Image (cartoon, rainbow, N blue to C red; front, side, top):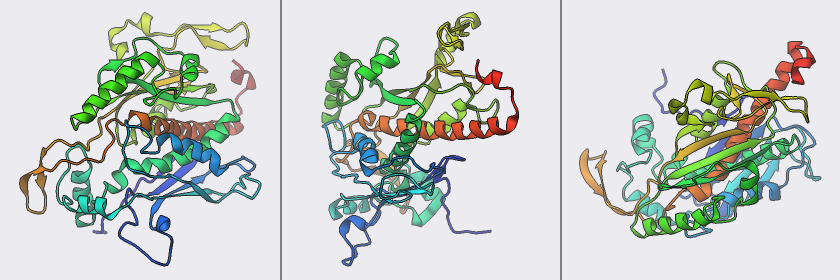
Length: 399
């Protein structure tokens, strides 16, 4: 039996797959005068299952990466990463995919020695809310201590790159995914937001809340928290619009389970609910059930309400998929905290840390969009494969 520590779980998906690698400060130790500094390290995304003939440009991917890029507003980290993406495989000179895996690299730029030295100063300490304890238990002395390594939010840039490729494919199917803030540190949107309202106010403010008046209050509250050296959590809601019926399986591979796997793999996500979510605990069955009817315009079955969040029995229903996820406060704070030095096995006080996101809400929503797109496209591939071999009467595909 091998004793060397291993790391698994860097690939997501079955037929549409993304494989990601890279860390927060990778390359910071490996200074090589023979190569440009921007190639010391970074993030790599390999996307498998991309059809030939899809237009994929670096500008298309860059537009998604720019949504989560740090250092753009007072509400996010001052770290200055360009997040410039380079496509190195799977696309020809006409920007059309070849059917081969699409490969992308995002170099790390802001890996200054002063920041690495800061992490070196407490590399043997468990930072509260961070992944150090698990990393020590799993990888021992080899654990990546600078910037949290693979547990850093930096790794999500590679997810966004993969999600951008999925977006290009889904748009051809008329499927749109949009995520946005509905709550920040107790300040919450007080009404259900329609897809149209969300689209009309998408990215109209720094915290991406469609309620524009509430967004200003959220910003003011976060700035006060930032001034105190602390951070704030919140809730992101996501809508997948135009999703066909029939995606997902009845048991282990429910569409809700696939989406939960995708979204809860994001480090800062601590909970997820679909449709009415936990509110169904306060409902009667007659209230929770979504009544079906025949849409006179399309002749298809639709539902008068959407408490199910667009998924029944694990399978999509034509209605919008709607879910909400809890985003924890950034664990990096400028407040002294009790912890343990594992090398000396003694209690210590962790010194204040300054470089951080006061809230993750302005930068995490594109990551949620990306993972949702990857899960949906993978489910579509699986459903199409099933329909081709199932022999099911086409009349059932038309209801």
